[in-house]
Length: 315
Length: 260
Image (tube, rainbow over all chains, first blue to last red; front, side, top):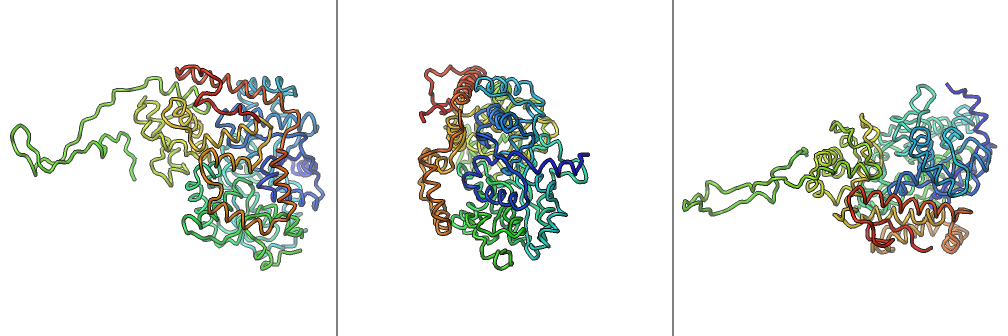
């Protein structure tokens, strides 16, 4: 068992790895994460001169290059930032850093390729165990926690029905997340609940949503759009059937996939859905009394302003 | 729909005749349907080794054919012909021509990793799908799939600069796959957000087009990765007994070295 109070202290000051998506299409996630950190007095220091983690694309060219790219990010955090906890809100980044950590701990070939590429690139090699990668959910769960949110938000989200959508890369494949599935208090890979816990603490009503870890087809958003639209439509319709007002997301690829294919499903298949899509950090931000513009909600494709006014979520 | 392991009877092999005379005897009405016989003679005994030599395919030999992968598969649920277990079976048996029949859908794997999660033998079926798609392209059975074109454009930017720029990925991908940028759904999305976005954002996006996001001191990493890719490509071709590429940029070598 990890000491909970130890984590609560340790995670208050972490290296922050936004990644490419949070500087582009997923900007609302970045803005809202930083706004929450400021509100809760948590310190985020950007990983100095970071690079892309390899996303989902580089591994299809060569998985070892993806391992190298992620290892370089960890090396920057350890050797330049001098920090040993890296917080990555993007599921893709989080997944890749975890995967690199696993491969570098277990696969000699990966160690060799990464050491070789690091030396040619002129930076220090990253070795497994030097840093810990956490998700924004782990970060908030350990620092402010459910009790903290309960006190601060006074149940502000009461009446808001949320479908919590975790996606693929936060839970699969399970072997790269050794800290999950460890019983009470830990995250589950088959039925994740950290997002549910945090939003419930802020007063939201989490609906029974069966597609928490279904795939949105994000890898082929553009290259096989019809498949993506069908997968997204499943998720949107299931959320509506569950009675949700909004789908809470924790991944910029899922988030833009849901938003873009919600429009595409209407245009191409004539299937209109009205459920809104917001990053869970945007919803928590509202609960903490931060204004929607400061959380980047106006930059989402799915226009949630009416819902926010209706549910009295303005500060 | 049931999955038939060996679809011995295929629609194109069924011959139906209205009037038929066999050796001078009119058998019309009695024998109207025949099935053309078919024999598989072109086994590729190296097929499993070839797929196993490509990234992702390393653990294909572990498969027990339990079917957990297909059962868990996201794509199988909307396209029943997408069947990882069956393809792994074909590869392990060396049925190259059978495998090639599905060449146009194998690339559609969405990498959700449900198969890898479900597999009791750690075959990593997701990796096998990618290796197989890669193999089809290297062998010249298919053109580069839209997915490969996307991956290559994405990776090219990362290798060149350390980071990607979203609008450049979208724009270059649509251009390379000959799709218009002004598709109805993209236009609607653009119009919806443009009405709400602050002016600052528009300027920021234009700025990113001119001064693309870059990682500081990236040149050495770029060179190291490019050299590694060329080296790996040679390994893969050797494993598939293909000729070494004559020039740096042959049709199927990843196009990652375009001038920036």
